[in-house]
Length: 601
Ligand SMILES: Nc1ncnc2c1ncn2[C@@H]1O[C@H](COP(=O)(O)OP(=O)(O)OP(=O)(O)O)[C@@H](O)[C@H]1O
Image (cartoon, rainbow, N blue to C red):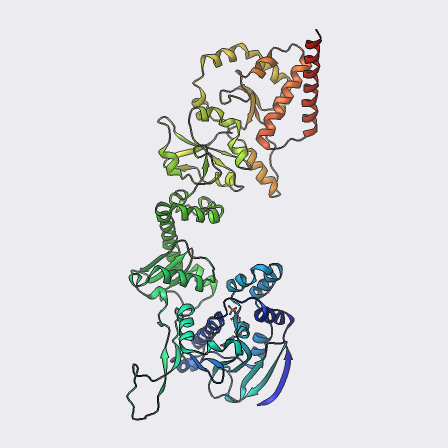
């Protein structure tokens, strides 16, 4: 041993170690998963390095991870013949935290003490988890690029400092010895170690071997009378996705997902396929997924991989597969699909704009709130909508608003509700933008009911005799309003859309909608000013009352009030709310005076 140095851990490592050791760590056994995963990474790195250094080829013939234990010495040893570490690398890797993920983990831990133990499971916390069960950890390592006198011994009790010295090490690779705390000595046990490996590390593609003694069952033919030690492979050595679908049960898929992706929850669904043909690959998809193919180039720069023709073909077919998987889930297990939609619906809504190729299959998976279900829960599919459509209905109606209640109570819905025509209620912020791309379904166009349009006119053209008479009687009112409002509105007209509401505003077919304008403004862009069409319900008692007003000032005041009400309902706010409040108060005072006068007479 040469030049032993004592060095201090970076302060974040100290924090992490403190947490590891003192937090309520219910899941102590994961220390082995983390160390095996590091060993497996080290083997992968060596394999990768050998691509550019053929002299390392013979080292990659027998890559493996060896685990041994000694109950009496209270230790567990994890060995790999991977890439190893040099003196400087070990200081960088085991003395500091360079990974942003670990920093993020520390951050979340600090602000969320209650969920600490849950959180630890979510992040791969790596090497330092060894200190959960060990009072001392010793690492003997030698980089494949160093000679035998450049081995390194790193030791620490996990209390703020570590020692480091140069040693002679014959083999390249890393050997980690865990000196177990007395309270954790139970981990030095064959069955326990085997179970942990099978639970967390079965999918590791390198053999994980354990020291085993000869027993009656696994007798080795030997002339020697003393029991033989040999290395027994514990993991199946075959990644889960490479096994036959029929030989894997649901529990294995679920456990694999949770361990591989560091997730506490079970996957909602998965799709496991082996494809043969021009390209051969296996995929196991949980939205997060694994693709295993020998056809991909070994030169794994992300750009090269993404632009590769084979990657593009695989990507296209996997997108289709995921859409089929979701479609099956939505049909066979709508409750689980609802969980998916709640979590990912917003992202999914980017689909029509981003992926024209799969447009039909994407929009089929959309779920909406509608006037039929009368619920904020987005559960209506476009197929559901079409199945309930009226015999003469040619379009799919929708309305966009800031939230469910303003969509549901929008006055534009009044007549449609009476006619039993279903309307989709869209109130996610992305919806208005999405509707620019979601133009049709099953050859039916979408139609916003707050936009003026010839088809909507047609739907409402079937006016009652009362309505026709009222509109005829009140026809002069339109001109009177127009000459007062002038260019404050684009047009004034009668409407038969409304029942309980005296007036409403709509936008012209080719004009920008209120929601789109709001979206532009909220993203810091300029929005053109909207000129609304002011629509009057000629059968409403208030309109009939106003029509009869001879006093022009009073008439104008009422028209202002109706326009403000309509704008408030459409936009959710007013340019000058105080003016509106003042107007209402004046009208109320007049009303009270009038009542008093009548009583006094
Ligand atoms: N057996 C090993 N052989 C070679 N290098 C290793 C080994 N174990 C750890 N290392 C080095 O130490 C670094 C830190 O390990 P640590 O487990 O803390 O984090 P990580 O492996 O980068 O991430 P994760 O949190 O996902 O495990 C690794 O990135 C690797 O470079």
